[in-house]
Structures are given as C-alpha cells and as structure tokens.
Length: 311
Ligand SMILES: Nc1ncnc2c1ncn2[C@@H]1O[C@H](COP(=O)(O)OP(=O)(O)OP(=O)(O)O)[C@@H](O)[C@H]1O
Ligand SMILES: [Mg+2]
Image (cartoon, rainbow, N blue to C red):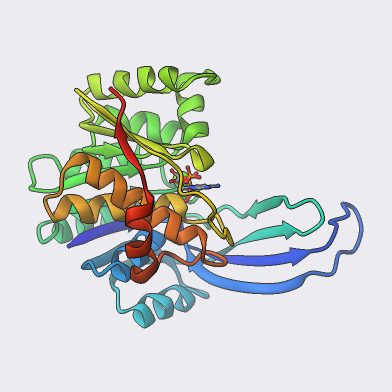
C-alpha cells in the first residue's frame, strides 16, 4: 500500500484562450476541472496503475466534497483532516496563439496548529499498514516549512520508505531528515543549489551531494530532457519518449513518483524503477488536464523508454 500525503488540495481548472490580452476581457474556452494537489495526483496514478492507494491530508469544510467525491469515484481510500475554509482553485491557462501555458495558483486557506498535530498522528497510524509514504507539493498557510522534515522524522524507525517531491525550503529542510528518495525537477535542483546548469554532469554532481547526505536515491526529472536516477554508487538516465502527443504536462512528475514507488514495491531494480517512473510520466502527458496515466498507456510506454547507465 502506498500512502500519499496531500497537504494543499485544489481544483485544477484548465481553460484555453486564443491570444491572451492582459488588462482586457478574454473569453475562454472552458476545459476540464480536476480535483488535484500533488498528493492526490500521486494517489490517483498509483490506483490507475493497479496499486493499492491511500490518500491522507487536509480538506476544506466549504467545498471539500469535490475532493472526497473524486477520491470516492476513483475508489481511493482516504482520511482527510477537515479544516474550516474554502478549497482553492488553480487556473491553468493555455494560449493557442503562443502555445504558452500560464498557471495562476491560489494559496490554500489557513490550517490551525491542532489540525497539523491531528494529521501527524493520523499519518503515523496509517503508515503502520503501508510500505511507502509520498510527500508532495506546496503547503497551505499556517503549515510550517519544516513540515516534511517533521513527518519524515516521525516515520523513522517504521518499516516505510519516504518519498519527497517538494520545492524550496520544504525540500531543503525535508532532505535534512534523510528521506528514502527525492524527485526534484531541474528548476527545483537549481533553486536548491543556487546555480544554473549548463551540463548534465553538473546535475549529477549535485545529485550525488544529496545522496552523500544520506538520501538513498535522487531522481531528477528534466522535462523534455528525460530523467536521471542517482544512487550513491551509480547513475541511470531515462531518455525522453519521442513523438509524444502531449496534451497536458500537469502531473507528469506526480505520475513519475507513483511509477517509481510501484516498481520498488514489486522489488524491481533501480533502472527498472526509473523506467516505470518515466513511462508513467510519459503516459500522463498524453492525457488532457490534470489526469494521470492509464495502465494501458503506461504499458505501451514501458518499451519506448530507453534507460542507460551513465555512471
Ligand atoms: N516535453 C516532454 N517530452 C517528453 N517527456 C517529457 C516531457 N516533459 C516531461 N516529460 C517526462 O515527464 C517526466 C517528468 O516531467 P517534469 O520534469 O516536467 O516533472 P515536474 O516538473 O516535476 O512535473 P509536475 O508538474 O508534475 O511537478 C520527465 O522526466 C520526462 O520523463
Ligand atoms: Mg514536480
């Protein structure tokens, strides 16, 4: 069972506009609305790939039914701490003229301290029946930036592998608690190390600094450049799948986390874990909006991902 922690749930609303004009009225072509938040995306991807998925986190009193309905419909078990407030909406705007995607993300409503304590307790209890705990995404107001570090530390000594996919301080502090695996993208790595990468060797060099600090595995997803998986000893690269009919990039990283955990749960080796992650990510990109990979697409992608040992 894979337990996905989702602290900042939202509705992802995808709309299309022809030639976005700032400061003027724009008429949009309505698109999909998906219950999202990175932990929810991971839970959905795990479930769609045939894994056992449980979602835990916060939800909001006013319109939180949108989240629980979506999880129920997907057949995903959940345990969400209810907080007073409104679920946020993230607008994903696609401009057909420029081909650019613009994100307008709201912050989440304030979470009080006692709800955080309640959630930590529930995570520890649930984790007793799980082998993987994923921690993904931003946090709503009121939640401190050391939250992932705290949760990873709470789980130390239990028989679970922790996976961290976050950015900025959440990631930096989370690393201090030595999660089993982290999955930063290129921008997140650059922010972490305060540099801009010119060459792949520089990324590997920094990824190895993280494994040297006690994180077992670092998977850096590089968008259209593929992904690398770095263990203390070796590095593998997954090349991007060519000629993908891309329809929505949201959730590619989340599907990747799901694929990696499922491969590891099956006892597969590190290059195969990377292949599963890249195949799941590629299968999510060909879906519109924030929809995760289907099992059929994932299986079709597996042989299309080329994985090579590069270190
Ligand atoms: N344009 C692309 N062409 C081919 N593959 C891609 C492309 N973009 C992403 N991928 C695949 O998806 C994986 C994850 O993508 P990316 O690095 O963009 O994740 P991310 O930024 O964490 O995404 P998320 O929005 O879910 O957080 C990549 O490692 C790659 O395998
Ligand atoms: Mg990401």
